[in-house]
Image 1 (tube, rainbow, N blue to C red):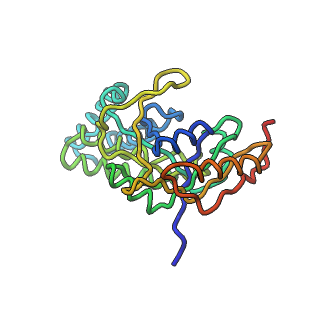
Image 2 (image 1 turned 30 degrees about the horizontal axis):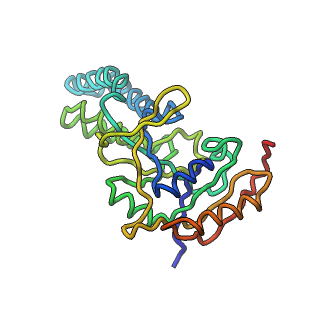
Image 3 (image 1 turned 30 degrees about the vertical axis):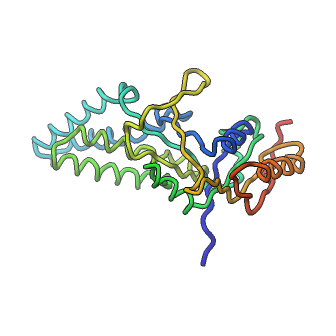
Length: 266
């Protein structure tokens, strides 16, 4: 029997302390993620497909009309969709020690990657009406998926449904240049995901929701911890181990390791 897959959530020191105290992590409205292309990438692929179809000679007149109407719907709704819909996502990686992830989610790499069993995350997600999905980075695969959505919506002449399905697809497809992230995500099933809380961002307030990390027995189970980039790796390892051992309702991880990335910011 193979060992369970471990998925890692990168976080700064304050983030770890918050997770241990609250036994939850924050999932962010997709329209407020750091990467501004998250939503637009899927829309741009859909626009290109629709434009090609509407200009093609083989399409019937009623099909051409649907493709043109769908393009107008995308253009009119995309700028205002963030005000009406609330799709929340949380990020994990299959890579426990990635320089790009340390840079993205910590300050100067000082932080932790917290490893969780995939099956454990699946059970938590199901209970809270989230999906745990592996991001796809293959542009050909993306185009096929979007083409299938367009075919389905064209058969019912429902351009609004196409827009909604593109929103649902967008957290699962990422530009090929981000492939090294090996990202997995928890994605809320409901696009009107309750009443969000708000946290301070770099340039605006960021809406988020809490995703509970403890099981039905109230115990938080972290399978592994990797200590990030620090000039004092052994002290950092010792202190986080003591934190977990003293924490209430937190099961000790099977192992605590130190980053092997040869990068220094001090």
